[in-house]
Image (cartoon, rainbow, N blue to C red):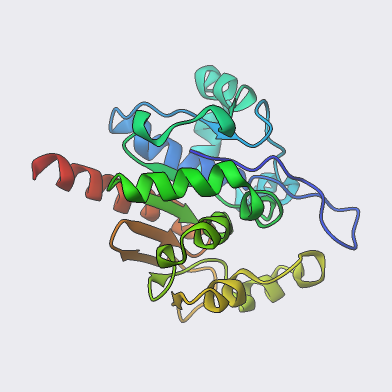
Length: 226
């Protein structure tokens, strides 16, 4: 799992970072299926957490489970630097969201190359909410990763509803479309929506984090049986 290291936003003192539920929901989907999970980030160490994701109304069952899980808390505090990660050592990669990835992972060379390597090695790439911003750098390196592909991600409508439109450098929906992606979204904002196209699995918003992980697991299990 590749997490953001970025917390500053534009035109505000409010901070962002990793949306904690978009990490914990998939993390336990993987762990409960006996997958080994390695956490990486551009800077390594402990990633910033978006304070809004810790608010009571955004807490999920996996958040509560995480609070009592010393192993997982230690792992999150000690992420490895993405520069040292090789796709050949893993079966898949997953990018959680929070607004942070729009700033750092969207332009991170090591992350972009990692995604290209996973695809070239016929291994799945999954991302949720603002996590698909990581596909921007990958598409710069290899345009076919996004061009014509059915994807989703945090929508323009959702961005307006969380009042962060003036605090980000671009909107993810528009950026994905500009790179040639066939963008889709749920009819109702903040409801779960997942798109799968080839090796690419994307989820729209926090509610999509667990379902996106389940779609990735299903793909991995299918590949095992082939």
